[in-house]
Length: 342
Image (tube, rainbow, N blue to C red; front, side):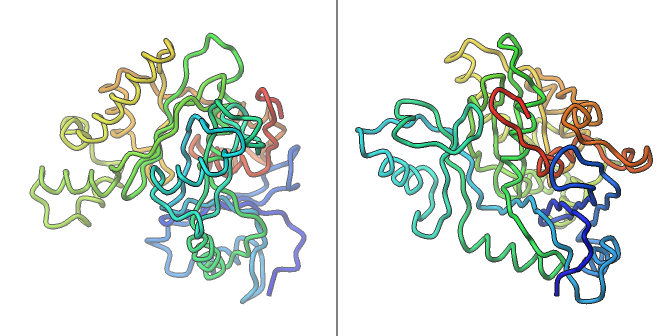
């Protein structure tokens, strides 16, 4: 049963939390009327919380466009280099060998690295493209989980792509502006993306994630298990900055290699960082990576940027409930076109 109410909703679904907003319109200009954040580790009945938020009847579902983050999602930048007419074969081979996935069970798309639009591969030979996708099984599993939590997914989007598009728009088109390093730390891996005025300059997966950091913390502090370490990592009350070099050793080594290669190849310097773990900022983590890589946090004023895109808040109270980590959710209502125009 789907809620009959004619409200518009958007949802960001992660394995650890659900964020949702009720909005006046599915596309900008729109007003954010109400928001909610549900910690799935603490809420015993997220479906009930969702239905209360949506003012839906028991057993009804909130109809929403949804931003999702399956662990096996793929966002990779690659130079398309194939013989004419063999571009599709090149992408399939890339998925098998570099992506580590079976193209037959994977939903893949090729996008422009400059503006995120879908492309004709033949027109992009010898150019950078984004190969994106997720396994069909993960899509099915995520849909089932959303339904269990009282959400009927009207539309599914990879949240990583929405975040990249929003960051690209916020960076602008000034060719002299330095690019931003976007880190998305999952359990088993980290998505590292360099975004600049020209679009995505680099996008790769690093096989080091939150579980690796938790294991390093367990060993460093002689904790009982990884669960205890993860609890400390999630807390904002612990300052792990003094031991961050030990906890982040593997991740930092890979990042330094990638940034160094990018800077040598392009002559551009990466200067800013936008870093998320489980969709949230962790002060010690962001500060430590900035210090160790000589970066500064990306200075995004979410309210000002959203207003420039036609997204406003019904009240200051609602506005105060969100921070810069909500950018992916609100990207669901924006049409971020070429050259950063909406």
